Length: 205
Image 1 (cartoon, one colour):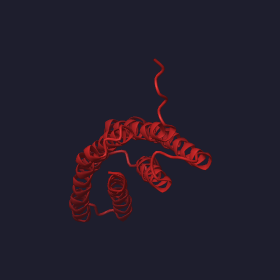
Image 2: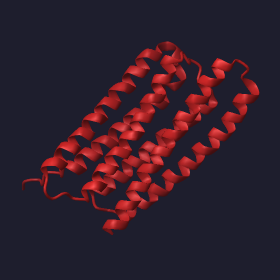
Image 3: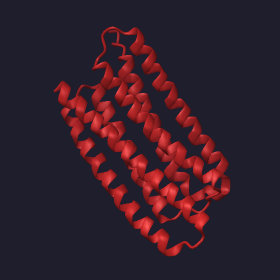
């Protein structure tokens, strides 16, 4: 029996989610060894980000030539865009380590990396359920993404306070503060994906 070909939109969304997981895993696994090769770290993250740009362009191209889509056209576009914002945030954070020569990530950066890694897996599970049309089951993962974003908010509060108490060099302070805020903003982008998925659930269930 011939297997039914997977819808191009769902397939591309799944590919995007899978790549975000690979990138977040790589980010978390290598964040503590930047002194060994920070340039390579930033370069690998840039490749993941470029791959996700390709998926976004695929969706745009297919939307332009497809009359009937499995979800509302705006929902597909908004979801792929929100996912692209997550990988952009990860890549932008990785590039800062190289540009600012930040080779000794502290405990807070490690915590952010783990929150983002867990968030990536929640996004992946939710998007694969979307492809299977198991909409209500997605809620478990959107709730988890909201919880993880709250954890990111708390880490930012703690690390900003610690930064101003312990770092006297103004240049170092500026570099770390910007990086903390960029990482926390990326957890916000993960929550944006959850919110987009919630909107899709409401409109389609």
